[in-house]
Image (cartoon, rainbow, N blue to C red):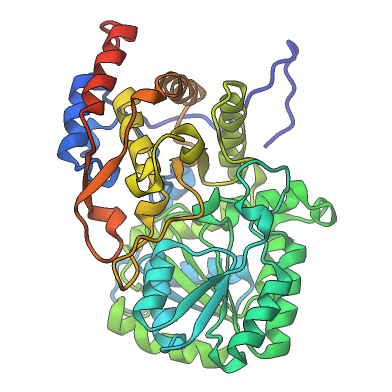
Length: 482
């Protein structure tokens, strides 16, 4: 973002865009919010959007498109095969990543499914900096296991370390030695570790990981869904990269990767995804599964209009003014919450602001899902929908035992170019009120628990009538205010 200082000495983000299309929001009363979250089974995924004031659930598919993207959608070629739209998207992706081959898919987890089916077999392991829910589920469904080898700093809530998403090199070597090269399906690096605060990896670390993988003949696979944020942090925080262009950094990362996959809901700001590689053998194996699961090779389950928008969105990802807006807003929100002594992950990462639910609600045991309780209570307090990223987002062991997550986080995503600064300040204000009244919040328990990806559609209920008490306290403090 452009370097603009304020004469009065204040410091806050300045948007380098103007708003030309708006969507009306609706803020319902606290009593209605209480009824809505109860009907949703205390699962913010099951809330109806008409009941949500600010949707901070995710940045997936809800980032604002630019005027250029919207205009491009009108030029879409909807031919089933041989579409010019696909040709334009393919050209854009090959330019962006510098790869020879591109295969389309309808979203990121579709890519994960194909990767797992091709490379993962029973007894195989996938080392990674940290897992993502769908990636882990698809690896385990195919008989594999996940080894998380993020650096120790990555699991610290409070830190000043700039690249908490780095892989621990010694642990990587140990995992390869322990399982044997032939049992390592691939090494997965996630740009912007989603579940531990959107924390980036450094180009230096990625280079070291690539050297080890290539020496051992193990594919290095990059989940580039949150690459835009990671690019910004590399350029801002890594001294050796400060004078590099964003595109130079992307091309360097691509050279070090064997396969890249991404959700275009995040990278490119459209609904879709894809897999890129320079390896012809990998390309041929992956290509066979695209028509089987996704659609023909020139659309892969995507809308042609979305494909046109993604092609432009990738080009705009190389514009620092475009990609900096999210991280700068997140940094502002984190610092405002820190001023109010609200526990958040530092340094500020990408994707959103991450509140430490175990510190916020330190009286609630992990068996009662403190991050889920925080998401539920915050919706009651504000009408803002966040996402639980904690034990609810894990899955039970084969014996039914609960696997407690390393962190219990309330993720408040900041979709790019969607919210204004006053709306961010509203979120901070309501979170402060909830923190001051946190003693009223208690835990949750499952009443309907799917075996796989339970956080998407499982239903819970409060362990007591604490939500009624919270609503009464809100009404006492705010009077007739929404």
